[in-house]
Length: 283
Ligand code: AMP
Ligand code: ZN
Ligand code: FE
Ligand code: FE
Image 1: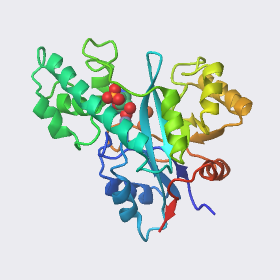
Image 2: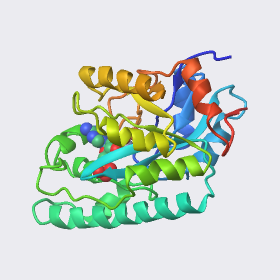
Image 3: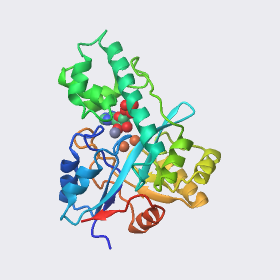
Image 4: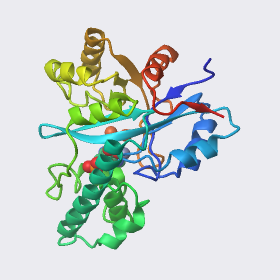
């Protein structure tokens, strides 16, 4: 039985959220959530702290991740739920992605420092040290007074076409989905329709992802366009996929608020029914 909203996509300071896993869990309790998933970018390092923080609260915690992957030249995010965190492929590939994120951020900052008064140490000071990304570079630019906030940094200096952007290595979306499924988890495509009717993957690619074990599509997300959502609903019906909805909360790092999009109890039950890695925890 659920007693409140189910929110399956949030970030802590292990990646680019502004709140520690403990603060994130407190915020979830405060917001009256029944269930929250902690899904840091390319890391499971926040899992244990989140479970400890939730103990005795009645909040259900879903251990998850948001994997950085690629489809052709596009960056695609894959949410993974309740997989075995010690699975060798997961451990190896997420370590590789985090390493390359670090290397890429350092190279971006080297380019930035030619034009702006910002150093690599400024960026390190903004990161939790586990999974580093553009948001931490943005925070360093904010701290230096170069831009007013993260969003402004993303719209200008850190934008894909802003002149400083560099890509990082990541597995293909097919490998990412397969990896989560093989580790006993449920893979879900994160915000797959941020660019209008043309979803991030076409029907043909989606068929291959379903074959590889894809379980769901994140339909309810503020960055999916209205047209895109319609298309996702069609695709979910065609491939019998679970539809989720989530906030993608980053604390103060993004305007997204907990439970601004939610997942129905029925969809949630189907999702966890597809997992055999680690269990949901309600302590
Ligand atoms: P990266 O993976 O390092 O290229 O950075 C992309 C990440 O930055 C995304 O996964 C988001 O979590 C975050 N992000 C993207 N746009 C914004 C924004 N406008 N404001 C704050 N964070 C953002
Ligand atoms: Zn993020
Ligand atoms: Fe994402
Ligand atoms: Fe996210």
